[in-house]
Length: 180
Image (cartoon, rainbow, N blue to C red):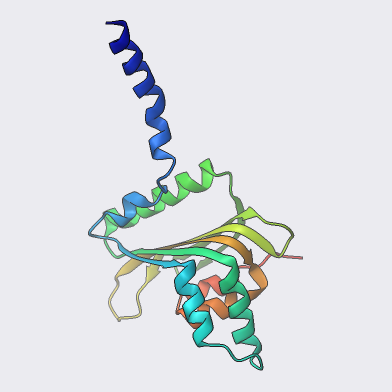
């Protein structure tokens, strides 16, 4: 009997540890209503190596940034309920991670929020989250979509534009920079 109680107590104590290895965004990957793109450090390296041209500053900036980014995840949905799930998950993550609000842009009904975890200096962050809500699609009809982009690594904010251009990421990421 004592062994059963000890086993139960140990199991209950260890249960929270099993969730630490999972990302807060894993639930979004499992939804059929949410599109997901994950770009690993290895894939960024492949793309960077394919575009080596030391004479082109944009390509060199991209190469430098690609070497320092560990992972990029993009979540996108046009579904109202799934979009709300993305927004709620992102807001909870930002709050629990104590991320700093870097910038907020409101334009034509859509809202873009940038959140970061401090890096080694003002131009670098260890993590960045961009949440775009109520973005109107340019298809002519009044459909809206939500986009969440997460990046981890030693991210140089001054070189984000080159990454956006090379990887065809949302153009709003180019706006991410610290005000000096």
